[in-house]
Image (cartoon, rainbow, N blue to C red):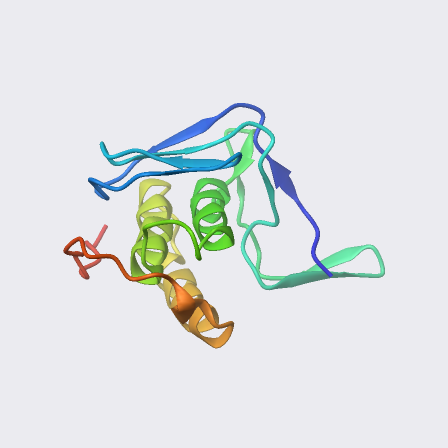
Length: 146
């Protein structure tokens, strides 16, 4: 059973290196400039897998609270979930989506970023995320070290 833990209160803009691609639906917009915009009221479950059992959430932790406002993996899980949710339509590969997740964890200086990155690579493959569309745009396969 799926549930939502987080919701955006305003549109969230991510500056990425994914250039010259376009996509737009009610929840996500990809601009040729590399910006990815996730709309207001987008809801997601944070880092997965997780499930509720007897009023407890069991699964992948979302990390500590930063500045009394959000959990440390908030932005990373947001961009990753939004791109994965529309993976059949967005002009972004699974590797690029996973790299966006890692880059956001780096920006937050999340200490377990390498572990979580391996988790999304393996879990995404197991769950069938290899069905992402390919793109004719040359893709940089390297993940920069934070």
